[in-house]
Length: 143
Image 1 (cartoon, one colour):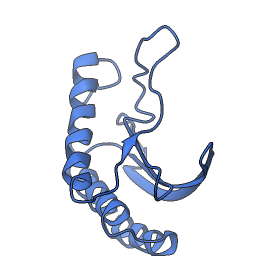
Image 2 (cartoon, helix red, strand yellow; image 1 turned 135 degrees about the horizontal axis):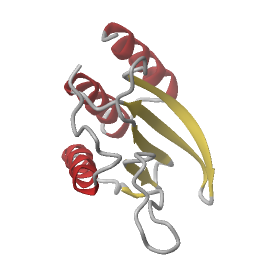
Image 3 (cartoon, rainbow, N blue to C red; image 1 turned 45 degrees about the vertical axis):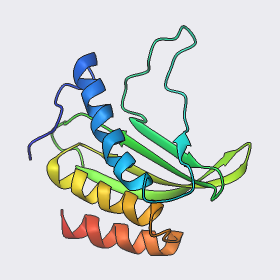
């Protein structure tokens, strides 16, 4: 397993490159739909400094569809699971937001799976049950 953007937690330039990597991928997906996906979680401390812990490295919300997306990138550690994903319900001012949460060490394989999951969630508008089945098949196959 070759981690992409190693040391992203400790190096601001590497962190920003990883963030751009995720954002670019999401932009390719979101420009294929008409409903806007906006920034969701605030990743800044009160003093204006960015929070750069990977949780989340990418967060988007489609207010119209009450859907969210959160990507949590973690650094490689021996014995850590490379990737998991799930559908969660987040209570917000808008009401219940169903979100796809992707939790991963970023590798070429985990990125390919994450991209495919984002595509199914954002473009194909798969429902929760369908996404759970897709997640189970894609992540179990690639372990």
